[in-house]
Every structure is written in structure tokens, then in C-alpha cells.
Image (cartoon, rainbow, N blue to C red; front, top):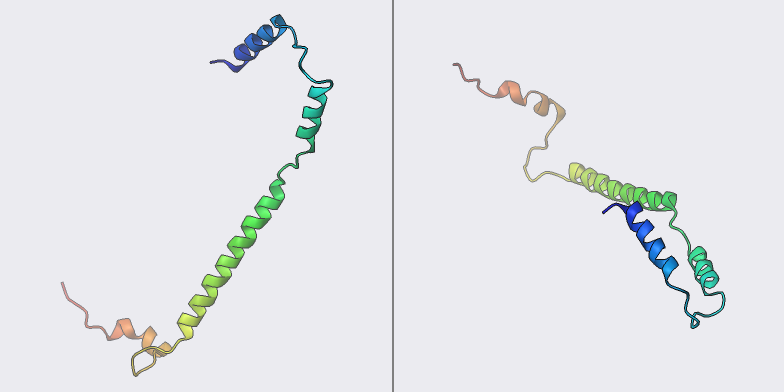
Length: 96
């Protein structure tokens, strides 16, 4: 349904019905004041919180990976740079 059409119908219906006598004095002003008094969500604050949580998670992951990389391996021979670089050259190649 079209929102403008719905709004026009609601305003027309509201104009047809007279206000009741049971409504307290300045009721609409009190309601509007209460609505305006509610704090609005700060989008910068929400982004800042999310980014700090993400930074903390990234720092934790990087620390865990650093500890894992430095941790001694279970094999007797530690992996050196030379053995890592020449590992592919030492493999027997298959001829097609």
C-alpha cells in the first residue's frame, strides 16, 4: 500500500472524530518532550566500539600465531632457512 495514501486516509479519519474530553491537559506536549529527551544512538560511537573489538581480536590472533611460529617443533631437526628453501630442489621430480 502507498504510504502517502495511507497517511492521507488516517488524517482524514482523525479529522472526522472529535477529541475526547478524557485526554489530560497538554498530553501531546508531555509525550513529545519525552520522545525528544530519549538519547539518540551515536553512529560514531558504535563504529568505534566495533573497530576496537576487531583490533583486539586481530591482536589476539597475531599473538597466538607468533607463539605458534616460535614454539619448538616436535621433530629432532629444527627447520632452518636453508632446509626450507632447498626442500623443493631435494624432491625427486617425476618425468612425464
